[in-house]
Image 1 (cartoon, rainbow, N blue to C red):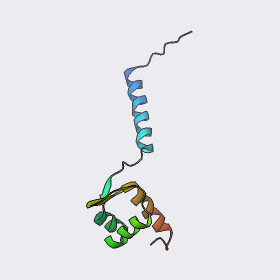
Image 2: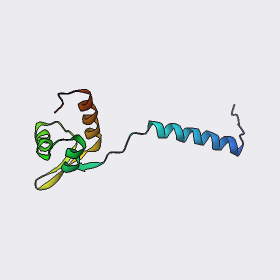
Image 3: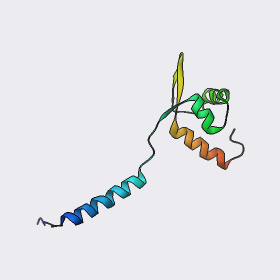
Length: 91
């Protein structure tokens, strides 16, 4: 048997507001592609170090090469930044 639930516009607004609040709290920061100089600045390293890390495979999400500037995933930069702050040997 089907049931019909009737709610007021105010109750509906309240439900929607709660769902939006919950969704905003669990949303992951969007991925942005950062050039090497920005990554170096964020991590407090030289651009050469960041390029070496690219060669060593420390970053898995990047684009560029073949004459194009390298762009590195902001999500990986953030993850590396968090691990570096918890480990003194992360350089």
